[in-house]
Image (cartoon, rainbow, N blue to C red):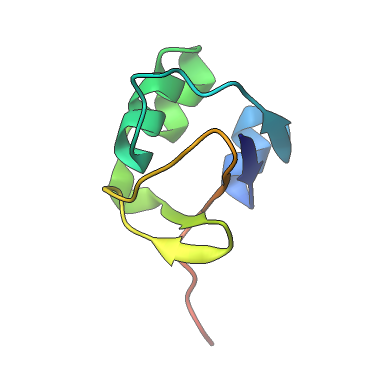
Length: 83
């Protein structure tokens, strides 16, 4: 799986992307973020509140219950406001 991070998410994690092997028990975006939170304090902070983030799976906006597989690209970014 490829994970992409944008804006403050990228800044907090210190990376814009990474490749991971998806654990077999992780099947949704929500389960993915729960697993990511166990990695370290930065991940725990970033993924502690779903309301601060939006997600896209394979470049399509998705919800937290969206299914994910090891071949997916998942992007995390803050809500966007217009001006």
